[in-house]
Every structure is written in structure tokens, then in C-alpha cells.
Length: 177
Image 1 (spheres, rainbow, N blue to C red):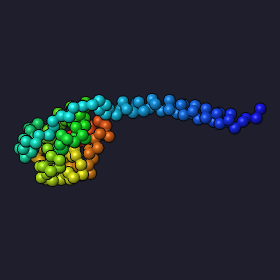
Image 2: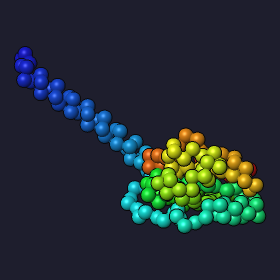
Image 3: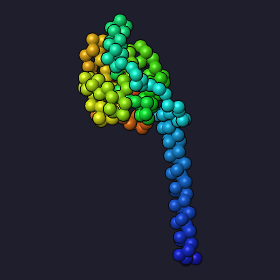
């Protein structure tokens, strides 16, 4: 029997649907695995108060340098504001394993409030961080205050779309040898 145009169309549609179902079912496990591996915050979180608008960055950095000298650590300066979602995600990633241990063992962390990029701007400038490229923005100092790293291109401004391993790699790279 010669196929009619209706039968051919039905067969073509059925083949296309089966092919689509096979493709989707084979890709689904990979997508689930990627979501698990990335470990992004998957639940809603409450904004934490990270950056104090009443703190004295000059005194905080001086105290951090003193502590770093005594404990043989480096100083990690984090410029941002509580309003910044990416700053909040960075804070979450700082508190997750293995980053929590890397921070505690190797760095003295100083959060420097920069308002809505309109306060305490002399500090990112002093440490060579072009704050206008986005926050959070980071700098790493040795215990004597020498800049070892200053974020130049807004590397962490899109933390919501990065995973925890990017923070781990950063901390591993800049921890004291």
C-alpha cells in the first residue's frame, strides 16, 4: 500500500517525538550531575550583615596586618556592601568547606564597606582595585602590607553564576606558601 500524505506526516511526527524523548532522557542525568557538582546556593538565604558602615577601615586593616604578622598569614580585603547579591554569595562560599578552613588557616579577612560605590573609596584605590568594575572586589596583602594581588577586571562581580570551586582555587593560589 502506498503511504498517504497523512500517514507519512504521522510517522515523521512520531519519529521526531521519539528522537526528542531519547535525547532529553539521555541529557537529564548530566544536567542533574552538573547541578550537584556546582554546589551553588540552591535555597533562599537571608541577607547577612557583612560590611559595617561604621567601621574604620584604616584601623581594621592595621589590626589585620598586625594579626597576620603574628600568625604568619595574609590579609584578604573584601570591598563591597550588604546590598550586593554577589557579595552575599561570596560570603556564603567563604563559609563553605573547604574555603572556611582555607580562610581560617591562611588569611585575616577584612570586609570594607564601600556604600553604593560612594564611601571609603580611598582604600580600594590605595590597594590598586578599580572598584568601578564591580563588587565584590578583592585584594591580597602580605603581612607587611605589600599588595600581592588586586582584582583588576571584576573577576568576582558575577559570583551568582560562579561556583564554590572558583573561590577555593583563588584561596589556594593566594594562601601563604
